Length: 295
Image 1: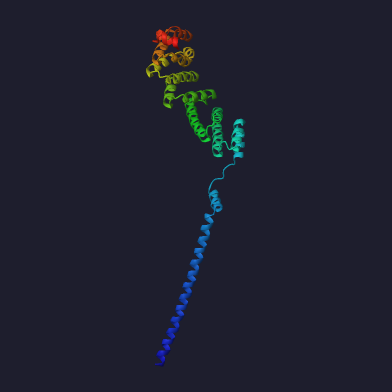
Image 2: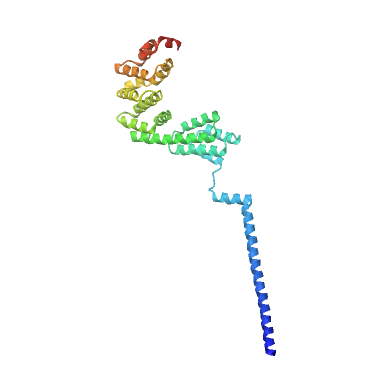
């Protein structure tokens, strides 16, 4: 009995000791978990702080060139100083946001490096800001103009086999701005591959201007083929769109006007004689004397 009681007491002591060790172990684990939770909360709090989050974001981004340094780079690239002064002044006066101004200056620098006539782009910026157009809208327009320049440069280079002259490139861009499509421009240039580039551009300009007047495509193509056969004839009739804009005020329809113009070219009539005929003989164009007098 004595041994049995002693054994029981020993087991009880061990059980108590085990429970104490277990409780200590649990307590230690709870302390560890608690410390980990506290650490996590501290880290999360730091990340949520505006300054810390901002610093983290800035570290991820590429360091941007300050606007003043960008202006200096543009100056060294040959961008007109009045444009750079305009951008700087309007940013300082908060008339244009810095992001739009940065975009515009960067576009000018890249266009200059690519050999584009940036004077066209500079004129567009001056015009836009003079009218109070928002910087974002001007940037969009400049990007579109650069795309047209790239297309024009490629098309003219294929035609001449050399770097296009600025005057030719400028004229090509102006022609595209008149509503003619790139496909039409490509087809026209390829159709007159044997002509000099200046003649092709004059013919394409004439074609683009007349196409805006509502002339039928059949008449327009017929007239173009006739004048493109002879350089002198083309240069003689290249101001026909201006004459059309004057005559159309007398209610002369585009098709009537073009049929008379085609007839005049075929007969070898000089443009000033054709203009005189339009002014003095309105009935020959299907216009009554009353409407002519009223005009």
